[in-house]
Image (cartoon, rainbow over all chains, first blue to last red; front, side, top):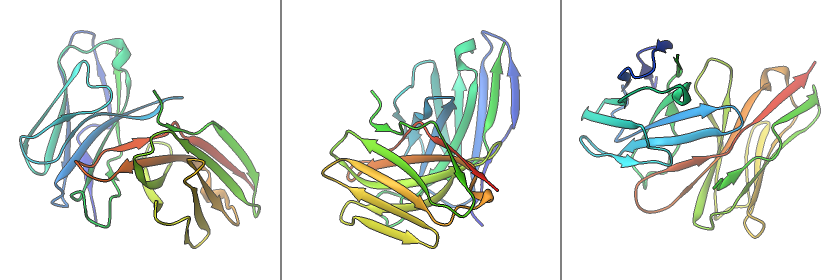
Length: 115
Length: 113
């Protein structure tokens, strides 16, 4: 069964801290994504990666960076956490573009609170 | 700039009746559309999709309709069940390049027993 695992379910951090959110998938998918979900704003794409060591900015990359050293792992980094980064963070993966199945597989999410 | 819009934040429907969730998009390059369902404290799960070469796709109680000229799609759930109560996200992607899926703001559906 397809699985995307996010390392933490809940996280509380202080303003200015460096925060790492980890995501692992076991489906050998090429594409991985980080979204954040906020009330009234839906899911917004932060960064995505289509291959190891490759990354592309999404719609709201400011204040974030990512790392993909291995195919199965995609990390989201908040260099200096701010209160406006309090949100639900969702990791997803998918097979490569051009396949018949373009659906994303999501993890359960990490609720991050920045105080 | 919201390229995928769900103008109804919430919807209440009686059990057994039809639920209709609507979605509008602005980017004419979108050619693949998906609906996801999300329960609280869980990640979204794929529900149904439709390619722009079709105008209808059906899967059990769920049917998605696409009107390309109006840049509008809708999800019909018939009959609605209490377990369908969730937030529904419309999403769209464009062919070519690397896959990037754009989501709408979501509609919270409540099915009343």
